[in-house]
Image (tube, rainbow over all chains, first blue to last red):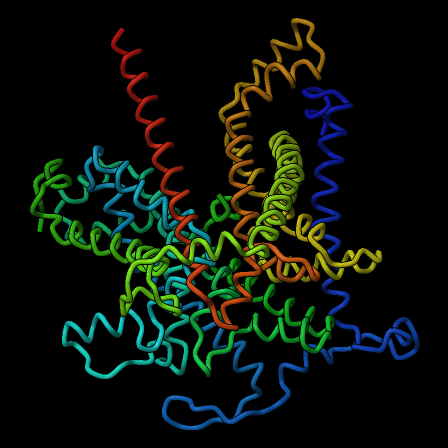
Length: 310
Length: 277
């Protein structure tokens, strides 16, 4: 603090502190605390708010365990509370999306960082700029069109003679194939760029040294390049997972009759039931999932918060 | 298999698979956008380029005559401008503050600033809505501005912070030693050094705001932005006029990217010429 006053004087320091305080207190900390507090309150008519019935409880969170429903699972049928099921499916498929996009992006990041000629790199980057700056909405909308029943994908494959009957592309994987395809497409560049940035900082001599010492290409990757790329992997995984778990547009646009996403249930509480308190509880569950995931990544890859958010 | 040193990395044949895969990857990224754009010119009631029923520009004129689209575009721009006005000062101030701290307090402050970036937009939207509702501030686009700014300010902070790390603190010292006031030092030394990052942060903030759906959806009340309007329209049946809009947006992106690239090449050529002299 003393350093600050010396460098910027009391007036400027106080101004910077006031602006930062407004940001962090009024826009971040207090709203988050408010969400937490509200999530324990019952949903009451306006007259009862603040009255004797307005007591804290875990009831909003317990709604997750209501409405046991029979669900097809791996060929058999199981009975699970529907919201709990959607919650778990959302987490599992977001994790799957994260892994798939990591696997798809790793070779490209390596290609961009270490293989491509310096002359072609700007063109390659330029071609990535368009899909990157096009909004999430349009990226999801594109797959809404492509995967439509009797849509472009079906027609193309039919004319190539690969399929004969139209296919419901979004109905696979228990109704989530479209969502996974859409999530992967919508957020894949959030995986690519952190990986690429991390790899460019690796000295090419290290790769050559490994090769000179007789390492197989996969040993070079596993023992030299992947360890160096850890901060990028952590950053990409956190971003893709967080965006997938919290996505609303993709599960809305490339849905199937049986695909439900946890954010859609939150929207139901907020807009259809008008029960903001249970909505807050569900939103808080979503936040906890993200916090756990970030912590897990930091532990797993031994990186700090500063490496993840860059 | 050991490969020859140095040549191994640029060798043409060896990376055939990677080269091929990179083409597939670009194809995967770009073709969906091309399909979406092509549908804007198809004379079909469904937003799809196949089956092709003939060329038309009717979807563009339909879009042009849609007064909602114009109104919500206006809303979108107003929100985006306010988000820039709020998040740029907050992010810049935050960066200067966190840059001057050390140890625990720095880590803590940094962690709180980063938290909104790692939080799903829906959570930010709902907490903003509930918080201001306690003070009887109703939902509306003003809350969307505050909700969006909470995490967009963090992007600005990160960009300014990166630039601050390349700043030579001795320049500040020199200015102060030579009798400049703190305000003069800020205006003449520090801010000019930060301007590129602040400008880039402002551009990023603007576009982040325009495309935002999740936070806006929960804070907007009965108002609409373009992204929210289209996003909610899809379920109720979408017409190819949305493809016309998408085509316009993609074209603007391409033009922007080309302008940026031309400027970058010109700058690179200028630098090369300077080095020759």
